Amino acid sequence: HPHPPTWHDFHGFPAPLYAVDYPAPGEPALAARIASVLEKAGLPATLDPERPRDHGVWVPLSLMYPDADIPVLQLSLPTAFGPTLQTRIGQALGALRKEGFLLVGSGSITHNLGELDWRAGPEVVEPWARAFRDWIVERLQADDEAALHDYRQRAPQARRAHPRDEHLLPLFFARGAGGRFGVAHQGFTLGALGMDIYRFD
Image (cartoon, rainbow, N blue to C red; front, side, top):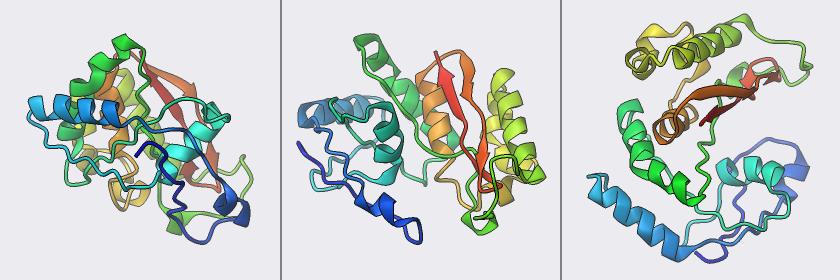
């Protein structure tokens, strides 16, 4: 879609979030090219010219590029594709970085809305959330792909940190697309919602 609408695909959050509009242009030709790259890598891709831009796109980009003056392409990662296939998607698209494209995996290092404390300040961090985050960071620093891909079984409090996978899977895409791991920011909000930012240079 050359001008995707903004989709507020969540419920129960503060009213100002529902007024956000992020009008960055799309780029249909690039979307077709990316679909072709994925198909050549044996990863089926479907173009959806009607899909609006969900909060996984406009929340981070409205902070990074508040003027919405760069073309943006949203790639929805199938949740049926576990960590290994998400990594393959990143590897297939990683070469685009050499052409100046920025690949962003948008999710959350912990994401269990039922465990949030809506009155907690930034100094409050649930021990289980910190334990999970710290394990992930240690495994990323060690480049331990086997452990990361088996995080459901190996990481402390994995099911509590992520009742479902979809908010962690973009991490594997980003790791596949990039290289050396680094931490740009770490923090929690509402007691248990991870707000970390990682780089893969």
